[in-house]
Image (cartoon, rainbow, N blue to C red; front, side, top):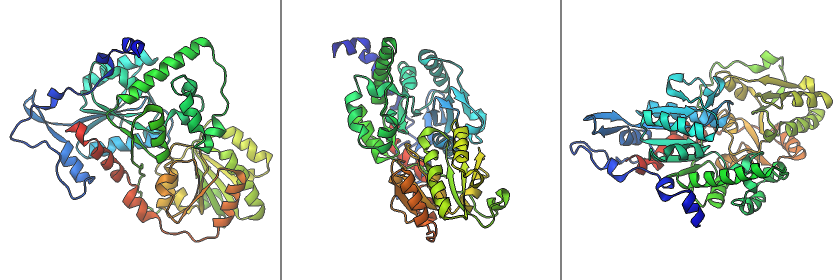
Length: 451
């Protein structure tokens, strides 16, 4: 398309490291990819990447990796993953730093702010310029972008820094994202709508927008497309995520299942005593309280079950804009005394909730979901919606029960598994779904870029 070439000349849109930048190495030291019997072992990654020759200063230096995520405001799974990634990189010999435009203490999960670059700017252009300046000062060898890749694309045009993109999910998982109605994507999105229940449930309504807004969305959609196409690699958390990236951007993504913390479970307090639930069976969910999490569906399902089983209590951990509406729903259907809203629970306190629940329910429509894996680490029985894409990584485990996200199916499944003995699932989580395993795989896939 000639007009596209005129708008985005090749000198601007094709970015990447200059080949000459990595040619000169001190011949006395080896900087290649080291062999290991386990290609994704932490030791192999550390030995392979953390040391390099800084020729301009004539000394050995530490490899720098920048992590970028536009807003670290809500303490969710994506934010936890990013913080754990930075901690892992620093533990394994990298000079790693997180770049963001917004953050809260809760969403940093205890991260020391000295490893954070908080960039104060608003608007895509101003933010991109400010991000470019911060990255130029840091001089990373690699940037790992967690969504919002257009900022990084614009910032990297002249810096020519290599970046990879961790796609936590395509824009099909964002309710108010109008990119799915643009000329570039609307036919593709119609095909993708049929593949996921939540897409049809939450994305069926399309509001009208002004002509000026339409033009902005069309340009933004093109910018996003070009940015994704310039990523040296793309990582996806699931099979559906990979297929959506292929459909929308024509790019092949590598599937890497995210991990979880592996806390000690000795000496954890019994939450039954705290909430006066002695003798009760606990149904637990841990979620951000927004529409996509379908907590209203769980409450209605629990209401049906509690009519038959008087020994049940529902604990809802998390906060969000839907909390007051959910409390009203409990009151309206007469189960307020059986439902406990805890609000935000710290990382230190959360394991006690998993350990002492009987069933964990995750009805969400979401791109992944860490809390079902955390519950499986404590050998809990898990009921999870089929359009929570974490099912790709846990479906075959004996404690996992995948359901359609309806009131009837969730209620039926709770009654079905309530008295079934829990089976061992911790070993699988420790071996396959720890943070160390996850990040070692990510670095292994980046080896060609960092060499």
